[in-house]
Structures are given as structure tokens and as C-alpha cells.
Amino acid sequence: MAVSGMAVSAMAVGATTPSTMAVVTIVRGRHQHLRRQEAVLALLPSIGPRVVVAMGDPSVRSLVAPTSTVVDLPTSGPELPLATARNVGVATAASLGADAVLLLDVDCLPAASTLPRYAAALQADPHTVACGAVTYLPPLDLPFAGAAVLDLCARHRSPHPARPDPRPGTTARVPGLGRAPADAAELGDHALLWSLSMACTLDTWARVGGFDESYVGYGVEDTDFACRVTASGVGLGWVGGADTYHQHHPTSTPPTEHVRSIVRNGQIFADRWGWWPAEGWLTGFERQGLVSRHDAGWQLCAR
Image 1 (tube, helix red, strand yellow):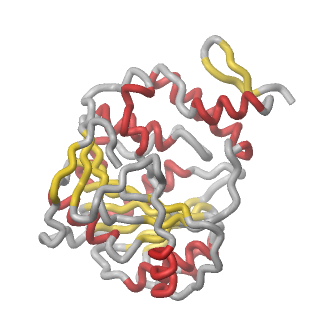
Image 2 (cartoon, helix red, strand yellow; image 1 turned 135 degrees about the vertical axis):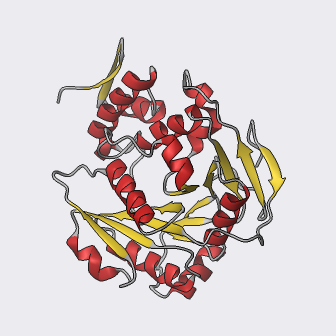
């Protein structure tokens, strides 16, 4: 699909790729999802360390390969320190000698081509953040055998229509602004960045500054990261063939179970960037009587 501001160019997928791209996953619960992810990764050629950050979930250590590095991150309360966990995972990957990192959410499965496509994209353009197409799988009885999972995923490929899906061997590039975006319109295509499947070199990670750990719980930390990316002058690269398959689990739209963290994180974002993110969710919450508008933005309704 065509997306404004993007230039599509050929990418030498067969070129020498970085040998130290770590795969970092943060997790609490979702053990069946993690088991399937592990089964798929076990089939793929390793091009760097495997790091799993367990957020207050000691049982994770028994679910991953013994060659993986598991970091135990203590948590308190129901809201998870997602931003902090990602930073810890990347820092751990760096300590293990990685020079690039792929963030892969626990409910996400890479295709057979995903890791080499990402690695090749970063080798071709190391000063970018790379993302791939994401398919949200329907409810499926997914096995725990990696080859069977890959086959089933490929037969259900249907990438999210709002995000680019360039042909394999090409990358659709979006330049960074080099300054803070004044509003959501200026953030533009960078707003499509999803940390559920995202790769970059550690030099680019350092330039952006990683995730802001002020954000706790679900929501907004990805949008803040996208603002940091474009303000740093870093572009996005949508990598053809770097597919990710999101395993089904129950969700709500808007995510009412996360309304408190979204409003709190939204206020942090607004104080920092001068405008409110997640307007679609907030408007949905408003229709349900969960939040209300005020002069400075949004607030929770008393219940």
C-alpha cells in the first residue's frame, strides 16, 4: 500500500547481515504464547543473543531455551513497567555483545524470513528504525511445533491494512523530522511505529534514548518513542518480508481495562510534547462515560 512521505527502494536482502542482532521479548503471563514463540525461534538461524525480560514472573525461566538470557524484573501492582522492561532488555543485549536488537512482543511470531530481512535492512541503512507487516491472527488452535506454526501462520497472512506492506526485498522509508512534532499530523507516518515488532541498531537506540520510563502500564509509550525517533531525525523503514503474526487473545476496543494508565500516560505525554495522543481511544472512553474533556485535555470521571 502507498503511504504518504514514503520512498520505496530495492534492498539487497542477500547481502552480509549483522551477526549480533538480539531478539528481546518482555513477558508476564502469556505462557502459551511464549512457548509457541520459542518453538518458532528454535527453528530459525540465530544471529545474536536471545533475551527475555520476565516482569515479576519467575516461571518464565523454565519456558525458554537454556541458551537464552532471562532477566528478572521485579514489579509491584497490576500495571506493568513495559518501557522499563524494554530498556532493560536492550541494555542486556548490549552487554552480551549485540550491535542491533529486534523487539518482539510475547504474543508475536516471526516468519522464517523476518530476522534475516530485518538484519539486512539494518545493514543497508543502520540509521533507521525498521518495522514489518503485522497480521492479527484469528482464533486458531495453534500447535506448539514450530514448523506447523509457521505453516499455519503463512496460510492466514492478512497484514494490518493501516500499515505498509512493501514487497519482499524492498523497504519503504519515512524520513525523520529532526525536531519535535507539533501535533499528531506532524508525527505523521511515525505514528504507525509499533514496538511489538521493531528493530534498530544500538547506535540508533542510543541516539533516540530508548523508551521513557515515566510511562507505566499500557498505552502511549510507543507514541512517545515515535516522537523521540522523529525528533532525533531518525527515519522509519518498513521492511518487506519481515512479517510478524500476532497470536489471538481477547481484547476490548477501546481498551477500557487500561483506561487509568492511558489517561495518566496521556497527561505525561501532553506535558512533554504539548498535545494529547490516543484521541480515538479517549473519545471512545468518553462515549462510555469513563473520561471527560477539560480545557487541558482529558480526565477520569468520578465513579
